[in-house]
Image (cartoon, rainbow, N blue to C red):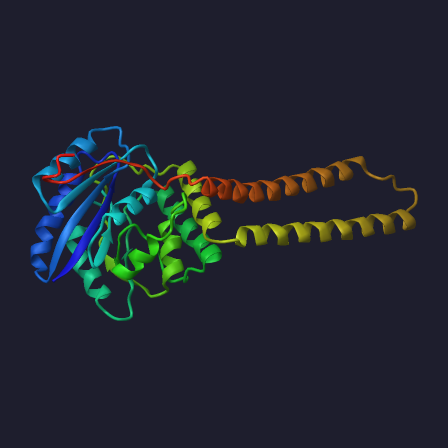
Length: 313
C-alpha cells in the first residue's frame, strides 16, 4: 500500500486547521489504496495554533506536529514538514480551507501516471483578493522569465509530488527555500489538475506586499543569475545610450557653436547614471549578502519541538 504525506504550514489557523484535518480524515477512507499521515508545522503563530495542532497530534498517531522556533515563512515551514514525511507521495496544502482536501484523489490519480512527477492544482475561479490575484499573476510572469516556467503552467500552493522529487528537494540546504524554484529545478513533468478554489474560512491572507517581494527575491536570486545578466545588459545599454548622446552633443556644439552646454542635461545624465550604478550595485550586493549568509550556515528553519502521540515531547 502506498503512503501519502500531507504537509500543512500553520499560521493563525487555530480555528481552521481542525476542519482541514477532519476533511482529510473523511476523504482518505474513500481512497483505500493509500495509507496516510499528516504533518502540521506551526510557523510561530501568535495565536493558540500550537496548542490545537499539539492536541491533534496527541490524539492521532497519523498526525505529527512541528513547532518552529520563530517565523521562517511558508516555504521554510513546508521544507520542515517535508523533511518529516515518509510517504511515497507528498501533498502540500493550505491551513485555511481554500485548498479542497476532498479533491486530493484527482491529484493522486494524475501523479500515478508515468508522464507526471508533480500534480499541480489549478483554479478556474480564484477566491483571493484582487491584490493577491495580482501578486500571483506577477509571480507567475516573473517565474517564466527568471526560472523558465512554461507559460501555460500556474504554480499554486496545492500540489502533490513523487518521492524522488522530494528527496532531491531535501538536498537543498541553503537558507532561502523557494518551492517553485526547487520543483522547476528538479523536473519539467508538471501537470495541472483542475479543482475548486474556496473562500477562506476566516481572516485574510498573511502575504503583504513586503512579504511577496521578499519571496520573489528569495526565488529569483537563489535559483537564477538572470537578474545579474539583465542588470549587465541594462548597464551596457545605458552606457551605449550615453555614448550616443555624447556624440550628439559634440556634433551640435560644432554645428551650432552658440548653443551653451546645458547644466540641466548634465545633471540629469549624472542622476540617471548614478541611479543605474546604485541599482546594479544593490543587486550585486543582494547576491553577495545571500552568499555570505549561506556560507555562515544560516538555517532554513529551527524546530523547537516535534510532537507525536506516545513521544511525550
